[in-house]
Length: 305
Image (cartoon, rainbow, N blue to C red; front, side, top):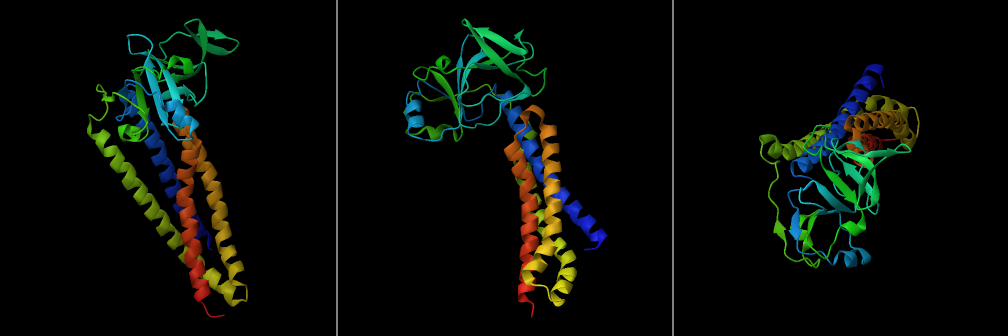
């Protein structure tokens, strides 16, 4: 492949891989902003009189992703949380997310005082010290600057009133042994045009990314076809010709994946999601290479020996 064509191929790969990763970062940030506007609740959160069947579901292997929240005082800012599965990330600007099964950990806002001990920060509650693993809020001066989230299994009483925020919403609670489900008001997101347009932008952006990656595969196949045809006419086997055409593009795609993935992680900061960002950067690259392989392979195998 000529140097000019190789350069154009690399630019096309870079463009759509970056677009995919950028959409993933935007979705993560937008989701965190929505949770912040909802006081750490999604639009599908409900308040239940009890969720006593939860332990039975977990023991039976039923997958549940989300969070349980319980107020620890009357302010609405001091709460206990129980993480289930792998829910959407909470809005934080420093540190990391609370994981399922962790005990004695906390997320706090920037205006909440914490004590330091041997390089770690702690917040005390009911005679116990909770390790601070992150700071709430997309920014330090967010509306969550005075909030505290403590995770400890004993603090969330599933036999009494509890806020349940799981994937799938209230419809997913059917048959879960729940009682007295009531919706919750007071969210501040979904009030501007961008709140409604964002999901459409993400879907359309992914459509453009996948179509563009497929078209890029066709363009790169057109660049590679003359050299592949020459190699075949010189007597090389079809499979070897195909590998010689694809391998340089695949190596460039691998290098671009690492670069784009690293940039996406750096851009997202504390909201980074390595698996999601990696998949978003890799899918356009993989699609482009697959289209390239399919077009060249079809052309070679249709050729007369």
